[in-house]
Length: 136
Image (tube, helix red, strand yellow):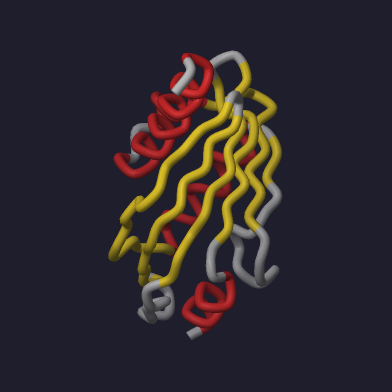
């Protein structure tokens, strides 16, 4: 893997790890001020985006973390080319409000990095399972 691709992958996986560990300082360090988080799905689910800018993203992450408990997280494939990284895996979650689990589903992430910071976090998940579990 070339140096740019490796740096992109390191940045994206660093941000993913910081999120998983709740390290807000590290997250802030790895996010561009104008970062966009795109997560499409049921508009009744309060963390569906897009979210633009660090402040908006941190706001949505607070709502997300108070409603979403990860039960399973497994990265299966991780790759990068230039400024773009992709991560594919499996997960399962429980919605804290309803107590319902999503059931296991696959996820995909497309992320872009500029100057050592994540500028795009384009998240793909089973939004039907998320919405159904969120609504109970």
